[in-house]
Structures are given as C-alpha cells and as structure tokens.
Image 1 (tube, helix red, strand yellow):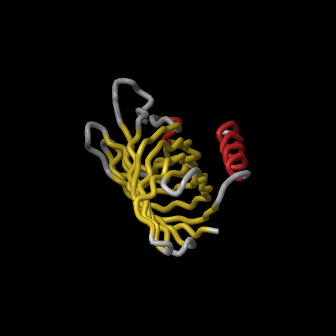
Image 2 (image 1 turned 90 degrees about the vertical axis):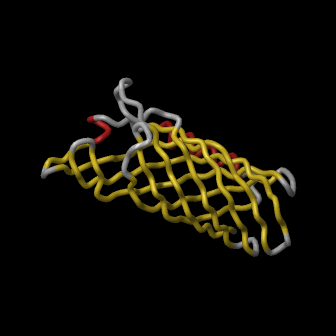
Length: 189
C-alpha cells in the first residue's frame, strides 16, 4: 500500500509541474461486485484531488487521487450483512473536448483507475468479517469513461462509469468484477 501511495504522490507532483488547472471535489458513487452479472450495489461517496494537463484545445489528460467510501446492507452470498469499504484510487483519464463556448466546455473522458482497498469489513449475524482476509482481493484495475461539463472554468460536473478488469475474489474458481457509477462536482482553481 505504501508503494501505491508513494507512486500516486509522485505522479501528482510530476503532473503538477506543468498542470494548467487543479481541482478538489467529490460526489456520489454506486459500486457493485457482480458474479455472473448478479450482485448487490453499495452506495457511498468519494473525494478527490485532480490535475489537468491540456496538450491542445481539444485534447488533455486528467489524473488524480481519489478516496472512496461505500457501505450499507448487502447480500453476502448466503446472508444479509452490513458492509463498509474504504478504497484509494488513482484515475488517469484522457479528455477530449467536444464543445467550447468560453464559459461552458463539454468533454468526454476515458481511461484506467488503479484502486487499492484500505479496508473492507462486514458484519453478518453478529460476526465481524475482514473481507480482504476472507475472500476479496484489495487491488483492482478499472477502465471506464464518462462525460463532463466545465462551467466558467470554476466548477466541473461529471458522470462516469467504470468496469473492473480484475477478478475481485481470491478464488480463481469464482469470477467477479466490479462496476461503479459516479456523479461528481469538482471545484477548479
């Protein structure tokens, strides 16, 4: 975990040397782990810091550091239980600007996010379970995209979807991938 945090800090500091804009924001996330297309979703929120690097008026890169919390009641294989997850992620998205009126800029974004689970705990029938010790892998790589709108170069609204490429279960006999939907607001400076 320390290596991932150091890599994220180095990435942000390198981008910061030539970034044209920084942002701080957060939003709503709906996250699920699906086995054969079936699984329950957990709702939560995220906060993030971002750095934009525009190569031209049409193309750029947005990278950041994101903290995600999801939790709630969830169907845990055979039992219902309460779950809470804490995750840190490093998104690296290519950004394609498609509309620019000066005060409003619309864009598409796509790319990977590298996640590492800090904690995932469940309580089932009075028993507490550490999901990373029991059955989940903490590392996940997702690929996704979405749309965004910058207003007056001060506020960014985004809607995005990520699909996990990594099998989240520790057993190779069971395949399960994550899927996330995000709605967010970022304040740019």
